[in-house]
Figure (cartoon, rainbow, N blue to C red):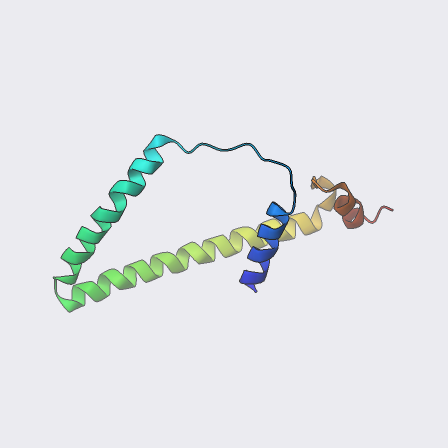
Length: 106
């Protein structure tokens, strides 16, 4: 189901031929990516050399962290969906025809 919504969102994003302005990423983001990968590898190698119990504790913390992140995202987007559903008159549609259909105007 999530794949369907992702594909639909990407289709709506790229269905237009219009050129969008290019967004430039700040330089610090490139530095962060270049540094984080090797540092993560070094940390992972260090943790794997420790006791198996400690490795399980770290993996459990990571698993719970991702679980909480996805639950937070789920509630955020459910709230957005239900807010839009209840307050359709406040929503601005880029596609004017879609906005008329949602409001029931011909």
